[in-house]
Amino acid sequence: MSVKFVLNETSYFGKGAREELAGELQKRGVKKVFLVSDKALVEAGVTKKVEEVLNKAGVAYDLYDEIKPNPTIRNVTDGVDACKKSKADLIVAVGGGSSIDTAKGISIVMTNPDRADIKSLNGLSNTVNKGMPIIALPTTAGTAAEVTINYVITDEDAEIKMVCVDPNDIPVVAIVDSDLMASMPKSLAAATGMDALTHAVEGYITKAHNEMSDMFHMKAIKMIFKYLPSAVNDKDPEAIEMMGMAQYIAGMGFSNVGLGIVHSMAHQLGAVYDTPHGIANAMLLPTVMRFNGEDSATAQRFREILVNIGRPDAEHLNDQDVINTFVWMISELSKTVGITTTIKDYGAKEEDFEMLAEKAMNDPCKPGNPREVTKEDFINLYRQSM
Image (cartoon, rainbow, N blue to C red; front, side, top):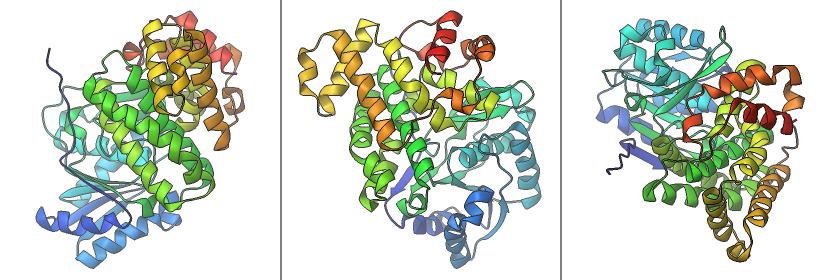
């Protein structure tokens, strides 16, 4: 059986890496850029760091920053209209998952106009044409949107998050510059870091995992446990740079093998209550991992992780102690970086659980979960996460 792996063409890493943008644009003969970011980054002066590179290189650009934290269909369709008016050659996306995901949606519709309704892009896509070229510069260390074939857009009418999976949307260049991540507030750094951990852990235990993806996910898990606390609490420059690398490494893995029901559940919290995605994952991860660990093969995967993150004694623990230890270590990491909330704090209500569970049953991430899950299981997991 063959294993397919899709990665982007070129990536740059390190402090100041954004300067490489000028050469990439020159090499590609780009005359005008459609710059996609969000208002918070514009106001914080983060987007300006990239604009300075464009100005110095003499490349014209139009800025589109009408993007919500959980980007919507409207954000994409308005972006497509603005991109058409811009007559740009290439999209430069600056931001976290929200900006880069919106850029991906715009990119796909620009070259596949028959998919302009956006809703048709939900799930595994069959678009014909590669999207308009994107160069992505992430400002958060979490989503890895700069290297994945996925993007998530909220359908506000249906109150669901559409998980669009399409190799035609992958950015041609990723520029992971820790300078752009250094200004993240502590709460955002913590949330996006736990998002990256969720990607790595779910990717490591998902049904489709393989030797190649295991390599990426294990490395990411080790780096996140090592560097996330100091990146968040001390703003340590090396730790911030390593977290940028870790989340990218996790992205190379999960983009090719999928995720699991932490994401199935988190997507619904984001769609219904507008819960920030990283926070949703952090709140759900311990509960769902305890559930998944009841599968003996998954408990063995947890054992492998523990041995690699400083618990060699896990080799000799029984499965239940392995599960308890792993869940405890995840919970302690969350607390260390200041995440102590529950889904109740973000508006979740008992009477909504059946509705949330029904939506989670239809989420594209569900099939990858290592343990089969029913609607009643989802209801119980939401209840336990309160």
